[in-house]
Length: 467
Image 1 (cartoon, helix red, strand yellow):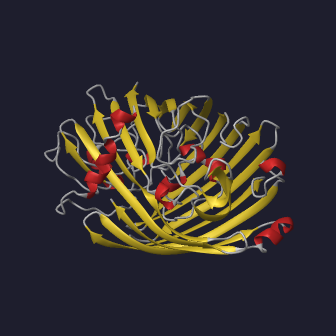
Image 2 (cartoon, helix red, strand yellow):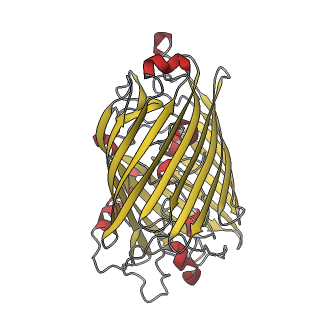
Image 3 (tube, helix red, strand yellow):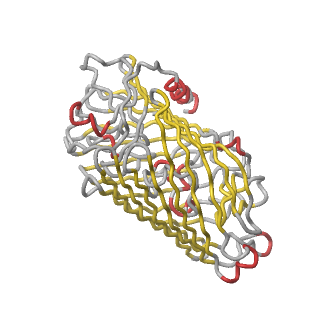
């Protein structure tokens, strides 16, 4: 599987080198088309970046570069559909997750023969400081480079291959400072506390195949090594309400930490705006070696139902039974619940506003449950400025180790952040941005001595987006 899909990583790098003469379009939400019967052939489209819209093969431009096209804007003309079913491309998010049809992303893409390809990249250079006795500061690079290849067949079915890479491992095994965050380990011995772990070098190598049953019904299969099972909302780096912030949410391990698992198989059925799916996947989270491939086990399972009642809303509820997720506590299992609502709307000609409200619950083998809540929102009035904010509240027993190094007492802590980024178009398909954010943390009285009260922190960052 890895040997088959690994060449796709090069597709994203090739996208960065496309000729400057490639056509450039602004990437903003536009009115999504009503779901329509699948048309074939349709160009490549990876679920995370849904609105690149090359024309069908019958179009005279087929097989030529059509960089940065906005799917939401062009789908009505070309009848574009998603990779997993007869709905607007903009509905598809990370893995097999859905988001509102009104969502918008971008990509550079081109075609060759029966295949079409897409590439996208976002890289952040961030200076991070966290105050208080448990704080630290660090400069690091994060982000992702992604490529996909798509082929549509005469019977209406679609094959999509996707690869995604991350520079995170180069920041070091201990990740970056993030007060109140916990999860995974840097050395295989000590848990990471008040830090966000780095993601894997290879975040995804996946393949999906979808086949229509009727004009309104589709079945699909998705496999990944690594990949993302059917649980939770779209991963935070792919949500419009979160993708402009370099700060990871502390609810990550409640909502979307399964977005990288080494081995996943998903089957799903969709009828118009309703989707039901189930996954079998490896429960163990990636170990401290971020450059390798962990062995697949497929010892865990999940189910998810998603409903998009209108073009501006996406609602999901999911359940997962996870075997031994923590490397340092391999005999402890988790049962996880998640529910979320995402609302995205257009603002004027180029603007948008996207908000996500999500809840997650983790229950261990001792029937102790811990809840996490998150509300985040991003507002972009035009193609230059984006303002974003997030508020979170979690119940956690990982901030102060107990006897023997295990989990300690349960505490309720909160975090809130607000920031902004300004982007400039600097070349064909390339945008450069400068941004900053400020964060405040709230801990209970029992934790104030070790945190120095309610500490704050912040980040200053610059970024490059290729789309």
